[in-house]
Length: 360
Image 1 (cartoon, rainbow, N blue to C red):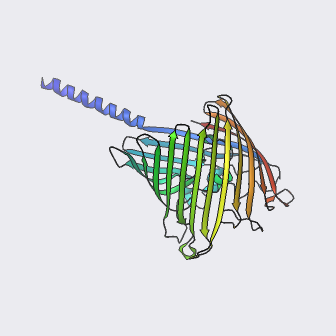
Image 2 (cartoon, one colour; image 1 turned 90 degrees about the vertical axis):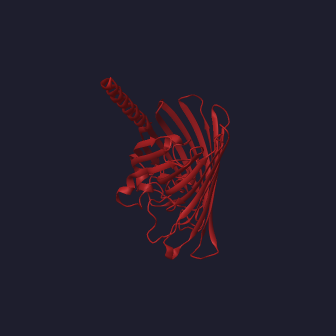
Image 3 (cartoon, helix red, strand yellow; image 1 turned 120 degrees about the horizontal axis):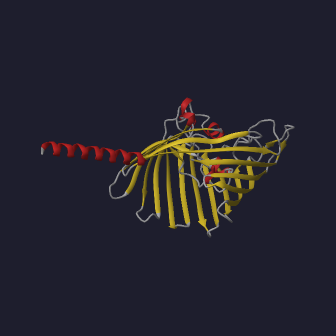
């Protein structure tokens, strides 16, 4: 009898252990993304880089990898974590000030659920930015290229985030403490923390309204300049085939340390997408960026950076997780800020780009 009980106990323990291991396996997922592109600037400048306010899909007249990463995600009822390592021209452009191996950390964060009854989480580490409707992952965006708005606000951030989602799914809110404006490590000589908020409202499953902010100093303490920034966007699914996004960014920054005078920049953008079939998407974007004081985009010209943009985009889904995209884009500036092959300055810039993106 004792041997039978012992045998049953051993078998039960082995079964529980196997079941636990299976649950753990299901909690861990491995995924990846890769986007290869070719872009041609009709000004045909000698450099192979797009203008220096372009931080995604930034190489010209060559086949290039924009972003490729492998991601491990772990999630249980009380704990979640993400780790992904990335390469490509996006990483080179956006992580250029980060040291050594940090240049390739696309995402690295850990989260803990703080409440048994409520969806309250504390996450810390390197995370996607809480600002804007566009992300670094092109296949998640309506258009192939990013807007000037997205390229010149943070794609990622480092710090801690306290977030809460209501039980009905209509409201999401977060408060953040950050290392700076798109930083993993703070600027050398900077001892200040930055702060942010995010408030998202989903009145229906077809409407998203979002408000996000950043408050902080992104300079050494010796030249401290406070920056106050707000992003507002709305996304509406007008029908089964048509969707629309409109956004507006505005920011102010002290002209100098302890100053009561501020420089201002702002940018509106709107994108409409039409999906006539499961395999085809068409999108059009109009945008404007005004930074005449050169807070974010410096030009050293009389009127600073005051630029209109328009683009047309076509997507074709070869497979459910493989998309071929093509976009024609025109930028028109108040001052001559674009360089051509003769090293002359031009007010207009036309480019065409095509890409192949895959998820796995």
